[in-house]
Length: 461
Length: 78
Image (cartoon, rainbow over all chains, first blue to last red; front, side):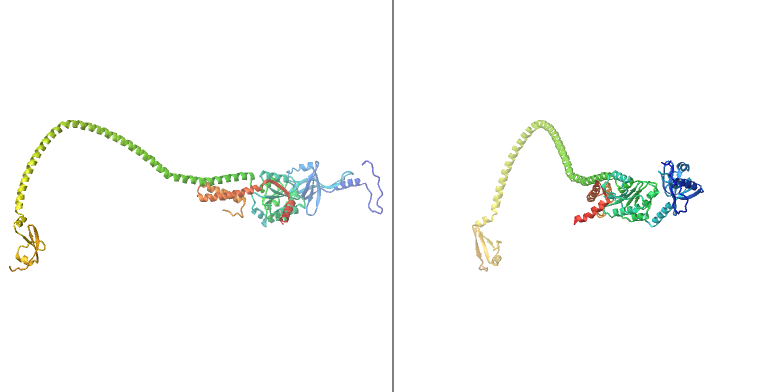
């Protein structure tokens, strides 16, 4: 098809331009002319780095413009750059000149600056801008509010902002399962890479934070170039996160990437799995075991606290009874010993008495004859005494009769019997003279057979 | 004793540890022991409730569904 020459058509009537020429010839001439231009060095930031097996492609940009660049892979590798040295945003100096791929009927033409040599010059403007913003947010204290928020050990609901089809979603689920967590997971899917991403992520975060149930929010995204992750360095997004009342756990990019969201968030994790684990600080299964153990210990303390004291009290209450019982046993023992001792003593005394009795009997037997003799002597003495007593009694009788006769001779009644009388006063006193009789008014005259009253009438006789 | 209104799992777990430490010391009298055990049981129940709430299996839903559910709740209540 391409081998057939196209017949030249008629030109535009009235046009001052030469031609018409075949486009392929013009494209070849254009490449030839461009390649004649002087080789120069350019500097700018690398963006949209990519490539094919043969070539590496990127755009060199600065604030005023951009140029598409290409470089033969063999020459790119000859530069000896570290694998991660050339990334989006990197400031580079390139040497080369303009080139033009003329294309064909089946392929598109393209212009590029053909790079023959390349040197990484340092952080690009983009990174410098990022660093300025980081310092500004830090100076405003916006890195702190999220870190001061209390995070629940067992959140009931967790919000997750991530791309709907990203691997981060599975990683978050794996992290939560690893924690044994089975609460409510609220997905807020949002684009995570383009100029629309930051506002939608911010809106999702605000909506999640507005739900009272949500205790923590995870923002997760897998790895990517700085340009890919730049949405998470958005100033508005970062200010929004800083002011949220719900803790945000960020996991954006790889561990070498550090977005501003990582600085602002309550916690920054290297992977979505770790972010999920940070959202649930407690290992739920372990916590259940620990709680059950604590419950058992409390139960044991409760029962032992009472039982130990009850046992002590019971022991104390038994002590007096045991004391009495011990004394009772001791007394019984002493009683038995006393009885035994008494029996032994009695037996000893009985034996002793028997021996004494035997001795006494023997002595008595020996003394029997002496007593008989003494009895005869005693009977003899007694007879003598009786005889002496009878004689003495008779003698005393005679003496008594003699004395009675003598006494009777002096009895006044015998005098009265002979005719005498006794004069007595009123009081029984003897009146022995006439004067006394005159003095007494009344007299009693006693005869041997009785007494009569008398009155003195004339004392002159 | 911690404020029941502000009770969190972390605070409850820390207080349970404190109570057990005190009981393990053997210095608590009978009345204090019984009071601590009662308080500890209450805290264990609270913590168990917190863990139970996240033991029902993962419930996944989209933010829009949650919002719709929350917006529908007052209407159902009416």
